[in-house]
Image 1 (cartoon, rainbow, N blue to C red):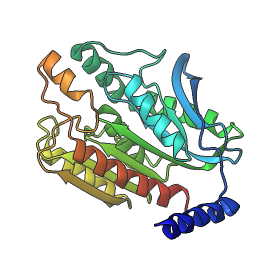
Image 2: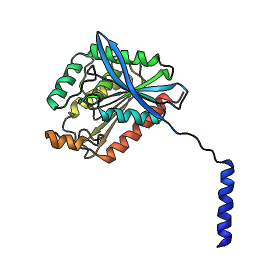
Image 3: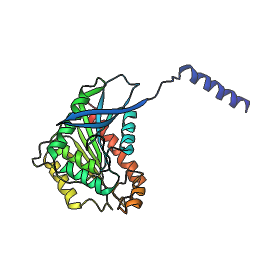
Image 4: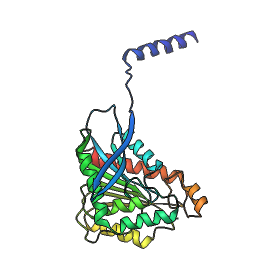
Length: 268
């Protein structure tokens, strides 16, 4: 027994001779304002301030509730993984919706006026490119619910992003004149999602494919709308909505998205 303990001690001492301690990511989030068309938008930017190298940027588009803590937490996660993450403000002035009726009105206004929505996204991207910590030639977008629909339309519009990733996104086509897009498109959808019409989803995927995108649609068995958000169950109970969190679908879709972002943004 003494010999075993001595061997273990010697092994630990030898490890200490070469082991290196490094400081992990320090994620800092802050308000990121940008303007266009007389409107001011209040996004949330998260980045690792311990990283001095310019990094690719990911635009994160919120659910129909607006830019809330859930969207900010996802931006923080992306920042810890080596991206500069900007959770954009699609409604202007940081507005949020408390009730589904308000959320529906806000999101409908945006999707019915794509030129204005696009202008706000372009303003956010332009200001991002000005930042010394951003690698301006590498950007992607991911979104949730309403935001998933926004990023799919960003790809349809041929905007300069390398990937568009949608989580339980609305496949409403807001772009009237689709443009070529040769990036990655991932569409993560719950098979039990009663708010996403399968025909509309298939049409969106086909249109994107026709424009040259590398499209992958993933269906998660039993998953409902909002499956990636742990707060979905509470919203379902409060407002009698067909929402539900699904931990397995959340984990699988997030991992798939990270692989796609790495391939699109980090590999030459």
